[in-house]
Image (cartoon, rainbow, N blue to C red; front, top):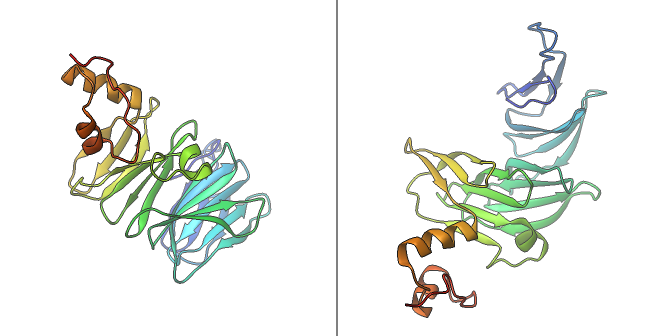
Length: 236
């Protein structure tokens, strides 16, 4: 279910996108859009347009004012599985069957970037509220959290991403809370929550350890690729 100002759209396996005006109180759709195959996901980008991704891996942009659809992407070898709309920058991201994040700038035609992320298909891709972070979940049971500017703009593929690699289950749903905690509904029937704020994480570590990391601890938990820094400012 996706909703925009009283116009919900419903995901159907018969390739129809049905849109209702909930203000009228009637049960009949005000619009029906026919896609090429069953729907995986639909996202409104404004009142009159929406994106859809289909079972055949295609992505469409629909103009609701004239009931027309434009094919944005289709590939037999790199099918799209999910999409996320960056409303602040007007970019579209798509998770593919190959584990790559596809980047679309709508002012340009076709794909403008590819970012290898997972070792298998990506079926969940979301932005946080202010579009500063992105999260993805794949068939490989890995969840990744990206700092948008560092990863997608500066191409810092070390500092720009946090990997959660051992949840022992696939994420069936993902969302960010208003304070940027990442919540995942898992296939093992658990709901898991991760803190994404480095400041809050450091505060939690310092409450438990009450001293700075040693260089070895830094390399074990943070990684040798990132320069060592004091964590708590107290080495007693």
